[in-house]
Image (cartoon, rainbow over all chains, first blue to last red; front, side, top):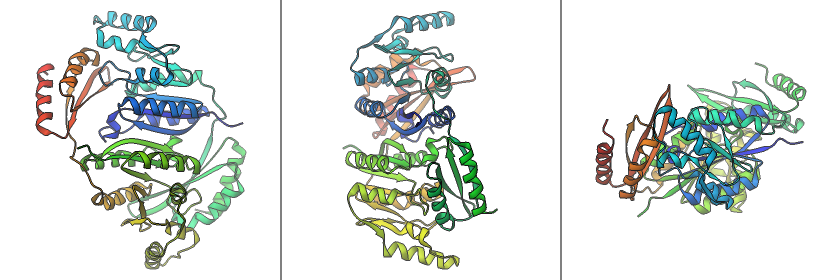
Length: 240
Length: 240
């Protein structure tokens, strides 16, 4: 009984150019972990049609769940909906239900639903809409691919709309111990512990700051009692 | 005359589980951009041999430069060097020059170069070492793949060691304008500007915070005079 496996595709030049620091990946990783869905791979590609379509096809065939962020706004560099349609080989056009959402929104604002804004109602055939309580323009799900906006506040709202519809597994429990010794000193007994508790994931994440070395040892697993036993053993191996 | 294209492979469970927020990708993206190397794709995979080897082979065949971070420490979950050797089909073993670096380092510290630490001297055949002034255990380069540590201070030091050896292109110049109007209002004239200056990359990055909407328009290109002209035109389109 393994957990569902997820991948994320981040679409946009702004992270690759070093202009923006990612926020959506970090958020999604935490939310999926809580839900018992294992985020297993992330890819970041630029606003390039071939790159997006190839990544979509690779990920949707390999993972149970694929979440994308970015590229669904009204400007010329927003090409995600068209790329999803290409990847699935389905038509894409302005859809009445999405248009109605936008029309009502801009009517309330006294603004015009112009050609550019109408691009945000382009939905690939067969998709269902993902609710966007922040700025209305919807995301959408097509089979196992869930397409969301890149603006963090909107992305997070869409994740909240989507998550109840995803089947999760056993939430991964994790405990950690901070050890102020170099990894080289703790590696051998830690490796033996990992062999003994082979059903758990035992990771060592070294840190080095202001001349102080050490490692955070993180033990993860779905079986809480087993995680407890491994943590107890870890504490006896490396008394603080 | 296009710039070299780079990819990054981040190896490790800690980002995928939402435990750690990425720092290395953000750092590398900025450094490569300054050097005129276009970071074009990033993949993040877990500490899993098949995932690492497959990603390495896909990226090294598609890009001029591949930088990896993570998985070269002394603990059981550090498997990057072995995965690189597998990907290239070359042997990997403790190498004398790397061992000598570590031996001298631990002698100075009065510590033992034990079996675990010696793992950090495992270097695939044919690789050259990347200097690590922070904690000595070296990274390595094999053909176009450059393997570095995941601890940010060490990663950054290794990037500094590596960068002078990489051939860069024309540094990408960028200018930006913050426009306090919704993307839907500016999309059409912006799209025309992007067509007029098709040699430049014109990106629109919407923001939404505390009820204020707008977009940062970023114009990038190697030709500074052309970027200036496009920015001037942008400013006339959207006077502040």
